[in-house]
Amino acid sequence: MTWLRERRVALAAFTFFTLLAADAWRNTISWYGWGLVALAIIVLWAIVAVRRRVDLRRIPIALGTLLGLMAASIIWSYYPSATAVGLLTTGATAFIGIVMAHTLSLEQLLRGLGVALRFIIGLSLAFELFVAAVLQRPVLPFWVSWEEPIPKAFYWSRALLFEGGRIQGIPGNANLLAFAALLGVIVFGIQLAERRVGVVAGWAWLGAALATLALTRSSTVLVAGVAALGALGVLLLARRLSTRGRLVLYGLTAAAAAGVVALALTFRETLLDLVGRSDDLTGRLDIWAAVIGLAEQRPVLGWGWVSYWAPWVEPFDDLVVIKGVTYLQAHNAWLDVLMQLGWVGLIVFTILIVTTGARVLSWSVDAPLGDTAPTPALRLLPALLLTVLVVHSLAESRLLIEAGLALLVYLAVASRARGVTVDTASVPPTRWPVVS
Image 1 (cartoon, rainbow, N blue to C red):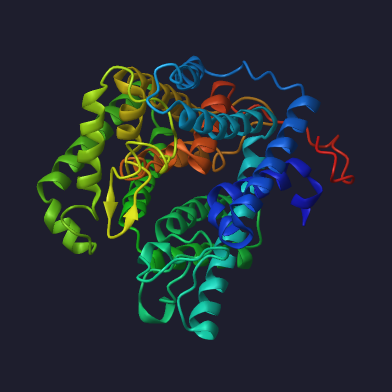
Image 2: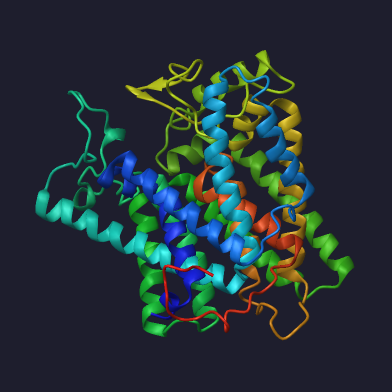
């Protein structure tokens, strides 16, 4: 496997596997084991940063401002200890994203993601088949002990593969597995278009990703996938137009997107019936109402950054409890930022998304210069990733944590430098423990 000989690609693959399927570690080797894995990843990327002399200050102003606001919020935080923990996890994830952006080319990112997603999808399908065919009973995470009745959300797998239910895979969550599968469709599709993989293997993995999407049936990811397909059409058309024609196309696309949103809101109940979801968006309306209520109490600077909600502090300990499950996110990244950092934070976050989107759009459409510039198909990756991340953020807060945050930071930083490529020819193929 060539990726094993390129240590940064191998490290990126292991990192994205951990960020996208963190519960695979937590459910098998416990939270303590996951902590050791996460610490090892951070240390290895720190070694990369030192050896490659990465200047961590070379980041977009909006990103630096947002990270600074998060750190400063410990001053007015309602829960300073939880904010300190949140800053550690957010800072570590952002640090990894920044180092990746400075040391991984777009082609290396594609390969790292491809390896991670193959492991996640392949192991998930094998895991669900083993649970349904051999164990024939639901499986709980290891190292836990709960009393009956156990909420369905607590199970690692509910053995539903042969019953037509939604599979959860090694991430232990159907929506997270579906998100990984959608990323797989994008990554595997680009690799096939670029002939970076064998035809048989490429189509097999693309088929596995599509099968996983069908078995998880996540309406949120389905909408994100439709948005990515629409973005692909716009990008391909924009490449054929002049600057003036592109501006017209972007304007029409924005108007069409607004129209689709308006129609979706108007015919919400019909659409929800079609995808088999409840009128309250699977409890999201209640969650959003609770979060908005908190945001109204501290509208300017919010309650303080916490990232993933800390269930041991107020007001998160009993803010949203549905069917015995305490929810630990707003299921909307924008509302989460509003509640945690107020309108000031939401404005900065919006500027970060808009400016990153503008740079990524240019990156994906404009013809690059130089012999080492990304190829046409590869240049589609940044815009498609950002489209999925942003649309997904309207119903999930994953953009603010783990893989979502790492990818957002990578795109924000790399697009500012147009994805500077890295010379990997000089990297020795051996001595894996020394990451360069």
